[in-house]
Image 1 (cartoon, rainbow, N blue to C red):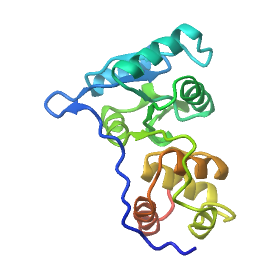
Image 2 (cartoon, one colour):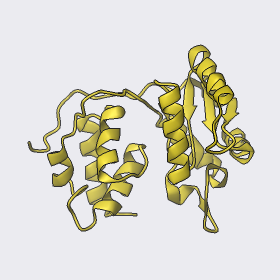
Image 3 (tube, one colour):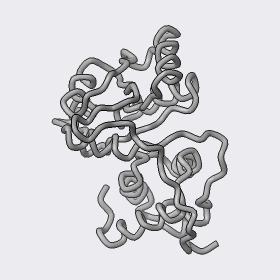
Length: 205
């Protein structure tokens, strides 16, 4: 199947905020206190801190209540530990929204974390929030990914990182990348637009 665009544009769920004071309706799930401080430098928002990867039942109950009452956005560190926490929360509280900060925007002196991100980087991530739709079929096939150089390609990892940043879905391996395209229902139009940007700007890992 070739990479021709269709017209079924998928629009991510709108972020509940007021432009005047950047107020976020949803509760943002972060890993620790320093992340909360960084978030509050960027927006007016409430957070729930997981306290690391050892998420207990009480924390998940708080997140579930927040999801029911206001909605939840998961914004964890762009590393393996952050992805593990993201999966635990998503499995425990289905239907959360997700925001991703690129690793390069969350790294300072070798340390990776949301607390290192600038207010501008945090705002960019929150403005591109995606809603999770577990179990949905991907609008992008594995053949599309191969054709786009996102798998079975010498620079596949770097291209996935660039595409993940452009689409706002983060970096992961080929199998997980395809799953995220389905989970967040990335449309072919979005995919092709990001691919065009990648090709015009070159690969930036």
